[in-house]
Length: 256
Ligand code: ADP
Ligand code: MG
Image 1: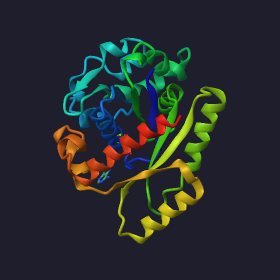
Image 2: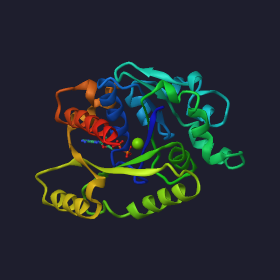
Image 3: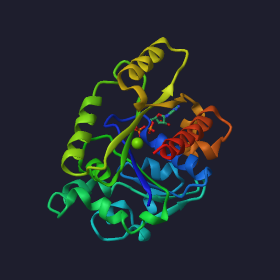
Image 4: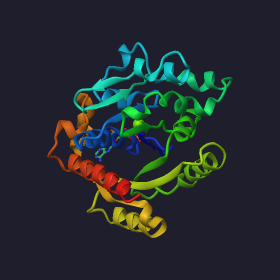
């Protein structure tokens, strides 16, 4: 059975997609079977995995609406070495269409049962909102990984996310837990980053991952080549950090 993790934070531009794509590629390099699910209508994780979002016959949208199964919509990311359940703008309509559906929070979870035993990890890239799409992600998952930038406003909004996770845990998915906070785009020379980072460790203790992802331009360049940073420049500091993070996840699972 696959371990299913959501990469979530309702802020935009905090590194969710970069983390999902590179953790998927990192785990694939560590010989894990990975499915990445793009739950964002922007389709950034789809494009960043080298899949053209304009050309999709089926996507996560059709899967959520019961018009396709996962095996009829997934594609291989050749550069990343993992499977992708892709997304595009169609998905923006799902929010409204799901409202009247049975078990609307559990559509993704239901759909994944068919492929659960084909993967070691399923990683879900969430949209920047606490919407029905994100709720579908949280209902399908065992855990949440929260990427954060260590800046002044980092903690703002975190309580909304934590409350949503608590609500889902209490009412919809008893298996859900916060796995940890991941510091991303970290600038170790900046005093503010150091300060916020220390604050996170103080408040959240061992819920803060040991791995810190540095700000690294190679990670930002990679998507325009349709590649995870790990494949685009494996020796870059950013790529190395995401491989470390993959190892940290495997160690975390071993301890359980
Ligand atoms: P989100 O999915 O939360 O909106 P993204 O992963 O798309 O965030 O990241 C936002 C922007 O920051 C993108 O342009 C991405 O390339 C860039 N970025 C993300 N992580 C890093 C990093 N560690 N170093 C440099 N740029 C990064
Ligand atoms: Mg994104």
